[in-house]
Length: 191
Length: 191
DNA sequence: GACAAAGCGGAACGTTGTTCCGTATGGTGG
DNA sequence: CCACCATACGGAACAACGTTCCGCTTTGTC
Image (cartoon, rainbow over all chains, first blue to last red; front, side, top):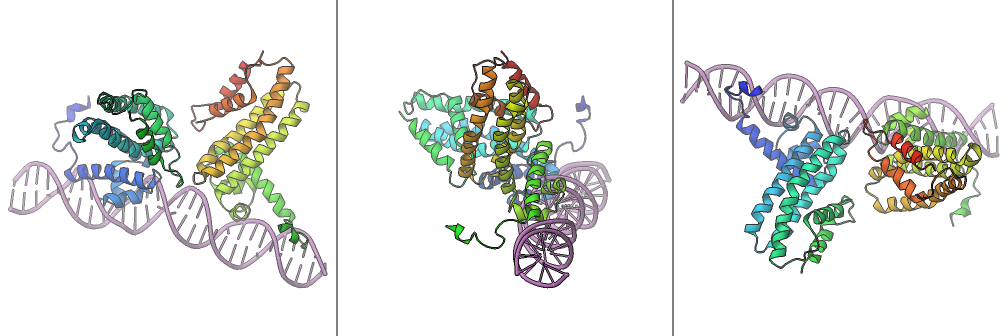
């Protein structure tokens, strides 16, 4: 019903606003991976090359930014699954690179619970949507790698994702290297 | 080997320092239950009727305070287990009251992981010590209630403690009432 | 009772998330 | 092409946090 006013002169964002929006999403994702989801807003602003005011114009609160990055990364992971299969030499190589993206994303995901501690229902919704979106993507890569005879058949996409997800819990401990363990897990899948 | 110097004039704390130490432990425990482990240091100081400087004299950092409260509450829980059996009318009533203390303690315990995110090994040590100390206490109460014919025999102390512990995850959500669910769990144990 | 040491209170500091407002800029009607 | 103004930007300013510091008070001893 609000669409009646859609014929206005400039209903859509200005060009620089759109640029800053995606710049912020990319910058925040990068900073989260480097310094964790607890990274200061100022650091994200610096990484994106904007002022803090710009962040709060796009994302009213810190939690909103985290959620936006989360959604953005889920979409990116889902999309990458499709293209990696054509870009990489073998399906297994594609799977490895996809899992690497997935691990980047998990940093955000694990911080999401803390950022949304006051909205458990919203968190469940996001979690369900994340599974709907990524399990098929992972399954496609895994299936291709199985078909090509590179990996065993004993594990399905959901199990792999949970396994990788659990390996990445507590990765803020400097003595713990989740990526190394994930690499070993993937190596263990080889036929 | 450090005991060689124990013959000094005043090796032990001054009287007011000892008072403030336990006052702080009690005040922090109370505030943690009321407002969560994220409660500001100033609130704890106010509850104990001291200045913030006094807190930092006793506990160099916030995490140290949380750990101290944790240890204090574990000891209190263990000690209470012994006395409640003689004070309450029936073993089951004693068990119910003990679990109530245990739930108070869980608020601190769940916050501990966040407070110690940089010391995973220390956390594991504390966790193991907590089990060693409290499982026997809980087992005694549970055993007594089973012997008196008040509760079923299907669940052991460790299971009960894990169950209660898991029910108390996410209790910072105002729509979620962990204590109510714990009460139902205990009611369900009745023979 | 006097004196040194131990302890206390709370102002002050540095770092957070968030708000505010003067300034710059992109899109549009002339 | 230009002038206009809503839109958007940058970063100073604010409030709340953990932590540090230091002048004053209290405690225990000779």
